[in-house]
Image (cartoon, rainbow, N blue to C red; front, side, top):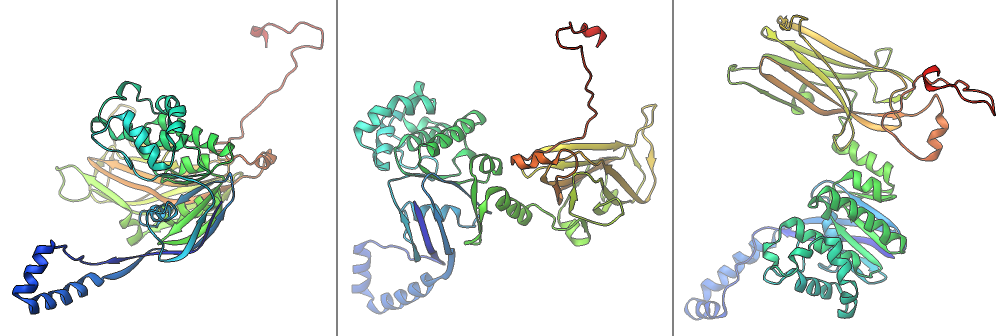
Length: 440
C-alpha cells in the first residue's frame, strides 16, 4: 500500500533572501545598478546555507490493512516523513509510492478557516481531503456526533478551543473513505475520553482494510494500537519490526541509564536538587545508585524468579532531621508500578537526627513479583528542606520464568505478577449441599 525507497529530504539552514516589491527592484536597478549586483551576490551567498537532512535513505513497505506506528525523538523526521507521503513537500532523493486515496491529519486546524462556522469547515475540510459533497452530506451526522460539537456547529471556528478543532479535524479525516490514513500526534490535544474514542475509531478503520500510519510520542497509544512500529533517529530508519521490540530499543536510547550503576558526572547530570532558602548549600549529596543481584553484582536484566536490590549511597554534610528516602519502579510513561520508602521518624513523632557522614540505603525487591517488562528505577531523597530527584536513572528488563511460565505463550505482558498463596478445598461431594459461608 505504501512503498518508500531511499527517501531523503534536505533543507537549507541559513539566512533567507528578503523579497522586495517590483518597483523597489526597478528603482534600485536604475539608480544604482552596481550596488544591486553586489547586493545580489551577498544575498546568494547568505541564502546558500548549510544542508540539513531531515530524512536520509529511508526505505520500508506497508501492506494493506496494516497499522504502523512511527516513533522517535523530536527532530527525528517523523512529521517530515508524513508531509512527504501527503505530497505537501517533495522528496530530495528517493521515492514514495502510495496506492489509493490518502487522508491526512497532520496539524491541529489544518484546512480550517477561522471565520467560517464549524458546519462550513466540515464541508471545506472534507473537500480539501478529497470528499465529494454527497459523501460529506451522507456522513455529516456521524462526523458531528463523533467530534461532539453539535452545540457549536454554527459558531465561527476562531471561537473553538484547540481541543474542539482537533476533535473536528480528526472526525472529518477518520470518516473519509480513504485507503490510507496518516495521523500525526493529534491525540496529544484531546482529553482522555476523546483519545479512547480515537483509538477505537482507528482500530475500526483497520478492520475495514484501510492502512494507517500513526505518529505519536504516546508510547501507550502506539503499544495499544500498532502491532508494528518504525523508529526514526536523526532522519534515518533505526528499527522496523514488532512494536514491543522497537519501543524497547527507543526507550533504551532515550530514557534508560544504560548502566546498572550510575555515579559521578552521569549521576550529576541526571540529578535534580532543590532546597529551601534557609540553606545556602546542599545538606546532602547523592553519590551512587545501583541495581544489584543477590551476589552483589551490578545487572540490568533479571529473571522474574530472582530477587534484586536497589542501593543508594549518599553523603550527609550537616545534621538532618526527618530524612526520607523512596524508591520507585516506573514504566516508560512514568506510571508508578511500585513505591517503597523509609522515613527517619521516632515512634514519639519526633524525627531523629542523621549526623554527617557517608551512608548506604538498600532495599530488596523480592522474587516472583514482576511480569515480563522493561522498567525504570527512580529515587527520591528529602530532608530538612532539601529535595533530590533521580528520575528513571536506571532501566532494567524482567524476563518471566518460573511458576506457570506457559502464560508467556499467550503473548501478554503484565507489570505485576506475584506468586501468591492459593488454597483449594472441597465444599462437598456432588449432589450434597455445600456448607454455609460461615463454615467455609
